[in-house]
Length: 75
Image (cartoon, rainbow, N blue to C red; front, top):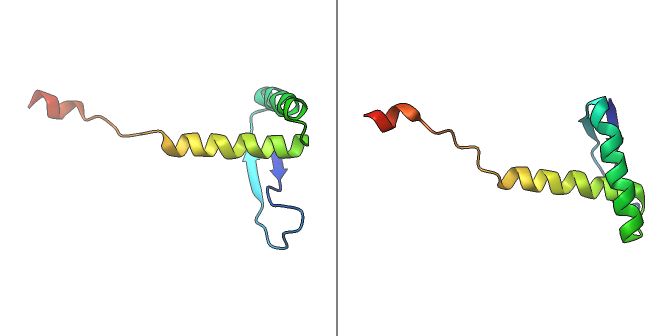
């Protein structure tokens, strides 16, 4: 399922679109979390969804994906 989100402020004239390909079985869970966050922080659900996507991106950028070379240990 493709979900289109505009993460720019309302008064911004230039923006780029972001397309997320989310499996159908996870979409209900993500929308539930965004609704829960929106109710807790008293913001719009669209903004909560954009914040979730943005924070997931930041967490993945910080994660280290270095591959360990097992052959070098034996030498």
